[in-house]
Length: 473
Image 1 (tube, rainbow, N blue to C red):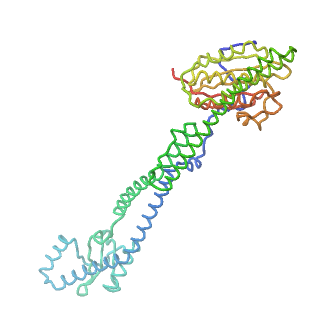
Image 2 (tube, rainbow, N blue to C red; image 1 turned 30 degrees about the horizontal axis):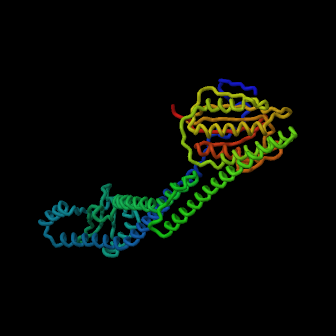
Image 3 (cartoon, rainbow, N blue to C red; image 1 turned 180 degrees about the vertical axis):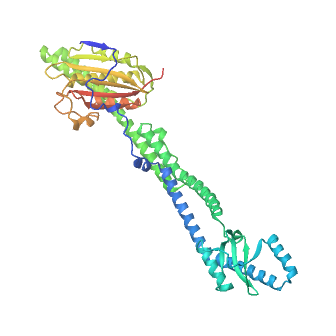
């Protein structure tokens, strides 16, 4: 068997288009990223929107309900202040009036000033509440009552009234009659909103905690770890308890099915070896025709190889991953098939590569791929399978490619080739195996934490792409 090695950097010649495991994952759109949030954030956002909407509706309702009482109360206070000031000034003697005006200005921040014809003022009508206060004052003090927010450029609450027929202004601080301002409501909203959002986060966490545990357990069961996927059957709520009990029973049933499958395949394979050995011995001793004897022995050897495939397929899922030299594994696999005249292998490894795997399983994977290429990937017009093996490191991964130059496989069957017992069409001729080789490869690669994919190459032939985690040196 011709065999060649190259240390040039592999560019994966005649690569698949595109190379499946070299592509970066597609970028998600912003809309899909926002929609693809986990259950916790979805529950939290829905609760937060509900709480904030309720708070805003409550705030609007409260302000509407307090509008009329506050306007009437404010108008009553202003009217009482005007009437008391008018009465105090009207019945005070002129000497005491000066002291009274000074005391009112210093102690009550109420100033009385004459209303000159040349005075300019700004009417108090900033909002609906101000207009309602002005209307209520007009009904109490008379329709000619003037209420202003500034007189001659000086801000304040100004109310026009008469004392003994003389027009005057009463000025006081507008803040003493104003309702709670925006800052008060803002502080209240921030405080209440913060407490509500903290409560929403707590509730969302409590609701989604069982779902998160179920997700973790499902992942463990998917990886074949049936015992580690057990959930608590004493849940707080009846629904969660029933889901956990159902999941545990399902995991136990799957574990039993898997165990029965392994025992059945191993038992059948083991029981077939003894009669096959006897058949081969009787064939060697009893069949006189050398040609018939050779064909019978070849059939028995093929059956023996199929039994080996069953044993490989029934192998337990547990695997102890260690740093393994990919170069040594490839050399060993190529050395094992050096006597096959119907194979030409070209290896392209630029540098020593270490991968996290099981050495025996990785050798079995590469041997299966080489055997698959030898059987079904012969170059058209020849009886030789030209096989290329290339590998290169990329970040924390190592990409391995094993390709032949045979007829390839129809695109519709590529995804099914790694299924157990699936046999390709006549494009890859004369199938004589059990249909488990590529299934064993796919299962072993997954147990090693890698990825496996098949693809046709642009120039013809089938390429097997393997992606394994790189070992840290």
